[in-house]
Length: 538
Ligand code: ADP
Ligand code: MG
View 1: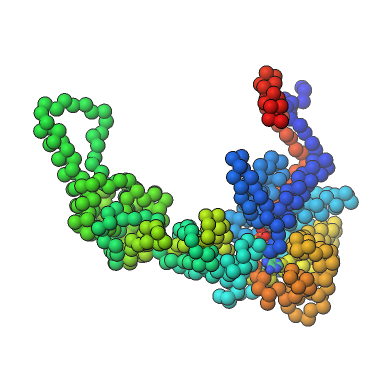
View 2 (view 1 turned 60 degrees about the vertical axis):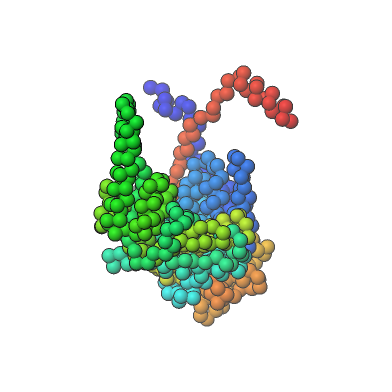
């Protein structure tokens, strides 16, 4: 029998060559985001097919936007996305550490250490690292938590905006906090955003409840309802159209009139059904016909039409109401409670603010122009993600590489006590963690090796609080970074270490790469046309 046919159209690399190529792909990917790390990190300008631009400092945004085809690079991007989902921060760190673990593994392979031995050593180092980090972590005060949220915005907006957004994110997280079956839950999807161009970004604010850019269906309807009942319909209050493909011949004009009258009567019955359920605030996703308007106005119902379905879902969370498919399904239990439903102006736009029995909060994102408002809102989302985690787990670590240096020192001692070749892998793991302080120093224009030596020496000399000492990026000396306000949640740092180990070990276990040859074949005549076009352009 010949070679398995499945391999006919594939390119195959095996063993060491495969590993070397895979590691090169990981290094290239990490190189693309490493320069964005930290408060002094540079931004990347991203361009899409349609020429739209986005300037960002966020590792995961860069990686998810780039069209990366190498499967190993994709594995690292997935690790970064997983970090984003788990902690909303630390996405660059996860990729940079993973690539460094791989680079150090390659040096060991060259010295004759088998990849499986490295994987075992890395796993041992990982579990030791996690328990060491948990030991270093401390319970943050309210003020510490806000500081940690601000640290997570490092490099992302001006200092004044960072300060403001950190406070707002904590405030919003607190607004949507609730206890479900005895467990504290903080759901960031209950926080929505209203963009308001005009005032400076630092004037952004949090409003308790839900704010939507909506005007009530008729200007004469009540502006304020307090302690009312709300119903939500995914549909409209319109005359019911005949179902199916009906044709009929009217024998006199009266027949048509009678039909129309009946339609209106049915519509008004629908409106009365709303009132009968004691509803005084109504939001529908469809239209409200004129006749229904008038009746709603007479009945004193505050109504909003053409409310997007997504907003109906938010209203449901904020008020405890259920979104109903039709008036026929309306009953008391499906309605929600509103403490306040207010129709008002914000700037020169109509807005509707609802405070209900459920929990919700809204960011009024401000800025002098559209782009600044969008940037404010993006930064707030990141900050909110971190704040939501911190309300549930207040354990903090000192950032800026301080914890990483301390951890590396600890792991080297742990390696000494470990027999066998795994010891070398544990040392390689410790070295890899130091990529964080090195990259932070490098991005601040400092010499990474000197910086790391200074910090390591300062930690070794410290009689207490060694784990708080890191390089101050402004003063360029080893300092207590905790006191300087560089704090990070344990829930951000811990998954960067475990996610990076996971990704690196997955890559180390590959020893065979099969590439399908999938290059598209372009017919000769079409290729000729393309070439001609290219010449014209030139
Ligand atoms: P990531 O995507 O990994 O979160 P960032 O660009 O947000 O990457 O950088 C995070 C790193 O920057 C963390 O190690 C954090 O401790 C560090 N950092 C944040 N603020 C400071 C600061 N003022 N001084 C030194 N390091 C800082
Ligand atoms: Mg960050």
